[in-house]
Image (cartoon, rainbow, N blue to C red; front, top):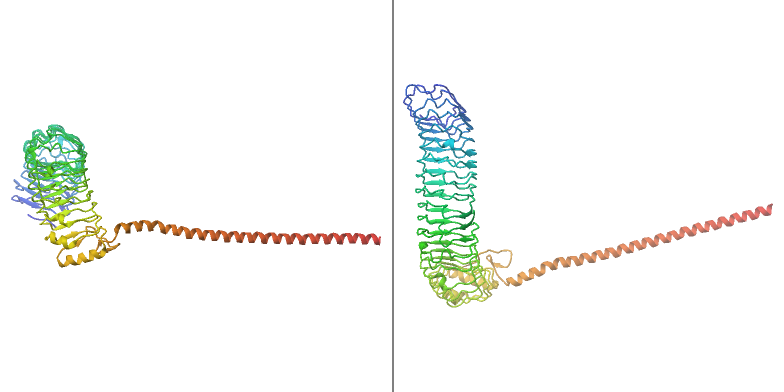
Length: 582
């Protein structure tokens, strides 16, 4: 019976009482908020085996609603708002084999699952579980698949799964687990095939933690923040694991025999750690390993690889961004892709690349290479891509590209090349793309290059001090001959031809650097002159004011003196007259 996607809010007691042959009931995608004690009461012997209550608004499951469904095998409660499960809410579900509680708001399981002896599939992902205790799940001995991903679990007790003898898949990814993986945690899970710890905070794995998990083929340890060494026993027992990813953790060293039991390992990623040492016997039996990535570490040398014929099937090797000063790859005849960029390699010779008959791509960029000696690449018969950009190469000699008659891309950008003799590419008969940007090349014989490398269809030369007129001429010729003249960086704010920077770049740069401080200096001179004139004018005005003040002051004093004298004379005269009168 399908009653999904309606507007059902409540299921009354005895609503399905007489439907004794009902075996499937779908009530999903309604607005049911609670279940009554007898909502699923069915007379006689109920045959209901599958009940779907997903995508509703349930907030709790009490003791009674499922107590009348002894034949129920599958119960779907995902995408509700359940925060509480009564300890005995599933007690009567003796036949239940599948329980889905995904995407609810549960913080703990408590005693809820203890009676589910037949439970095989459990999904409690996307909840708010904080801790996984042994009593919560240990009694479910028939479990085959458990998904507890996307919770907030911080600790997992070591004996949580000791009774799950049939467990095949366990997903604990995207939690906050900090507790170590102890060596008794999976001791009884001999059928375990998939184990996912992705994105947790596990810093330590006990030795022999997976010793008894011989059937384990998928182990995800990515982003678990593992610290310290990988010892010789940490990964013991993983003889069927084909892929291991320890990307971006805090591993410091790889000890001898660390991967000795991983005889089926095909892919190993140890990049972005802090590895400073790898034991010379770390890969004694890794005959199946095809991809090895140890980039972005502090590895000083490749001694752990030299002479290791056990890695003879290695096809992709990335050791970029380490502290290597030289490489010797002659022991790995099946190599197809090699990345040794961003190291301290200062020289190369033909012994580095002997026996590499299958190598198709090699990246030597961002090193300290100053020369490409003749014959250095002569063993690379089918090399397709050669990247030696961002080095210190000044000159290219005849024979520097000997043997590269099947190479399609050569990147020489960001070096110190001043003069480029295009005839050095005479053996590169299959060359299709040549990248020479950001060197110091002032002239380029484009016509000769086209004749020498007849299959060239793209030339990238931006950032060189080549005259713009020369770029225009070659650009037009390239268009006619179907050769794209371009640049790895498009520049439109300076002199350019279709985004290809050109002209005397060094002079332009120097002029701009010289001009930029000149402008403020001139500005300062004008400002200073203006200030001086203002000061002079101010002084003159002040001086004029002072003089005017003193002048007026003297006139006042003189007037006051004349008045006093006149008054004195008048007084004296009056006195004299009075005497005479007297």
